[in-house]
Length: 427
Image (cartoon, rainbow, N blue to C red):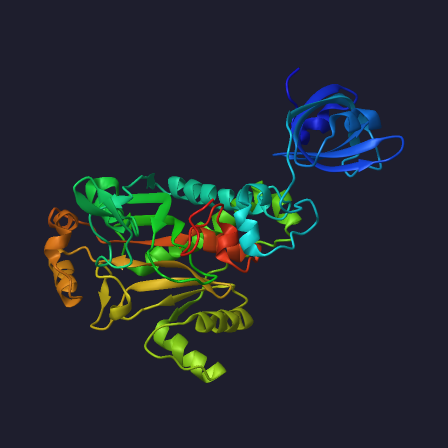
């Protein structure tokens, strides 16, 4: 007899079935033993004779195969249960380091991450990553519909995309190489190669010695680059439509997961745009907050997001026109001191950086020199701009940050299956 998934049991009432999964809970009464069985599609109550379970010395989180009949049971949450005839133990679970079958998982985050395979089974953790998967799928689906080509670029590179800082070095045969900070150079080269519109979902690596709730040293970046744009506003307008599609996609496919986490997806309006200097003036005027230098710190991001939400109802805000010194050498200048770039803040956290890129070979070389960089170190990248490059721009969305903000998580590591940060290299 073939396996029946729990989500499909309602179409097998009064039929014999085989279900397989993890034993989430065991409740022994004098006349019956109830099991809660979990598979990837849901949970079901199973009723067995007490002797059947006690003989097996069954423990929670053991993997079992149940055979039995699906019977109507109005007292069950699903309206039916499986009346068990036989139980086969496929893999017995030993003593559990933590209890994961309560309604909440009240243990420190480090303990959650140390026991990741076990804690990923929890009802408040597993759905996070189904939502995350749907976000990535929505990203891909929208861009394919918009004429983008999905690409897969190298993650071992000869130099950094921003001058060689914050890089993890690796020994590559007889020379030194680095883990990729960003697919930025390759995205631009592929626009120039005639693809015009490309995107990638892939890991990137930042050797930053931070230990904050906002940062990971390895994370998933949702990248896109598009040619023949007028300016950075074309990229922002695309992201506005992209996010609206992604959240609709998640809402359609993750209704149960969203409900189980009590998550309400944001509405994506026409996202307001605020130049950085105006944002800094606003923060000083409304909150008395001053800044050293021309940038937003985490508190500034939160306060600006609060102000925009209170005055417009938008949970998103584009901050535009970042200063030249705060942006990489490939960013299109806007006058002498500003750039055609932006960040997108969502619920007080930056989730996107993007903008228009330089497409002129001469201007790119000039900008490299102005940044104190040696153009010869970027020859393979620069050569693409001597062969004809259309005006272009793009962006990158941090998948874990976006997931964390949607799910209301305190630490971005909670939105990573197996996070890598300054102090964690396992599991």
